[in-house]
Image (tube, rainbow, N blue to C red; front, top):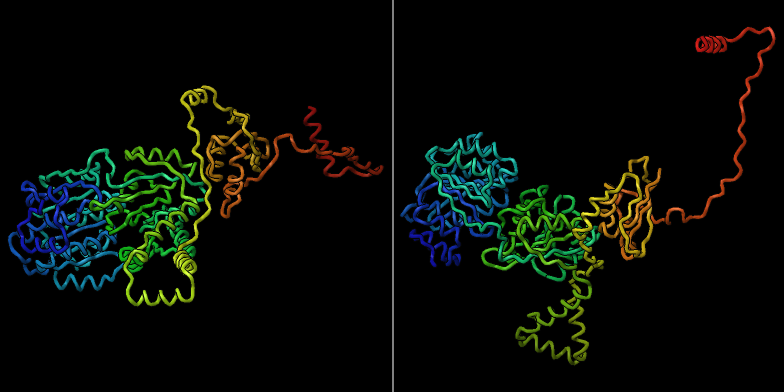
Length: 588
């Protein structure tokens, strides 16, 4: 179905970009009932929202004319939550209105504010910016909204989550009351609805998000990996899939660490976080878009609105904080009808949290182990045999050089050299421990545990299957308020094990001894001795009472202090008089 748009300038721009079939949200904003009205739109990520509101604005600022009118003050203001999204919206609206003579100016933090002021003073039709920078320009008088005919709030829910409510209210109050207000959001929460009621008039509600339905074009997989082997699991996933990937981390420190580690391993990787300058962030994104980088390690600054073509893989190295973050991170792939894959790295201690998170988003993920080094090498062989370097037709120069090689070496030797050359640029796979899925506790077992709770400081029996166990100790006991309630989660997190792999726990005055299943003991010992683990000192031990008895030796004789007698005729000392008076007071 073609775009239902009559303006020839916009029609030519869409055709030049290959936009032939409109998406659901684009059709909805172009419907007759949406013409020149305030809009409250919720749409799935990757559904073409930027082009949608760009087309919806045409009836207000362009009408049937082929070119926009000459103006100094802007006709449209678009507000976006992040710098990257604002610059992306600026690029989209630039090509959409280019043939209509549209001038689009971006105003974002981290860029030259004086240059933005000069562009605003020269005149423009559309201004795209972030809340803080837009408010700053309004306060300085560089941005005047007296002739503004429409305001667009893109990703409004994210702007409220980031604490931009005051800035939004200030900007909206500075715009004329007669303007159109278009509000786009992934979800219409209570705060968004309140904002719409306050600043919109007779708004048309457009909802293209299927309730409780995950993105159909994204395949989800949960990867079981030890808590101390997240990096190794990530390396093997990147090597196995060999696709352009976006890796999400929860902190800037993790981004720095993984970025440096991947570079050292030979990956073409870039980093993206809030601590980088805007130019550095733009350079990283351009490298990923243009194929000069294969992997981007990012915080949630890249989770909203970024359109990265040919991005086939999203990896959650750290679990998202909530359902919205999970969906927005994952939505960077599977865009515009393309298929994508989302991988969630899950350590044993975070298994339950990951299940709840996926369940809240109604996502059924496939649970599997990370690929091993042998599987990666097998995949490399398949890719080599299908590589275009072998399937492409050779040129005459290449055939001539090949003949000279065959004169010097036989065919197997040349083939082996080709294989070595192919493998020379591939990073080495990492060794990972396959995490056996933990047995799920039955409902009857949970009822029995609830009916017989563990008494404080009592022996804690976890395993009753007589499986071989290994003992460990920690210098924390009753004097340090040791309790299984907080010891068990800490042991699981530090050692990358599950509760089912913990046996008996014995708490003494100054130390605690506990059992770990023998098949997990080696992995547990490697995890607790890894660099940077300082939360709890743990070391191998013997069973309580199993060590050799200590010989205390003869007990020293007690000696009693005898005060020397006072010489005859000597007066009592002041200390003796006070002691005598004290005894007399107690007696009488």
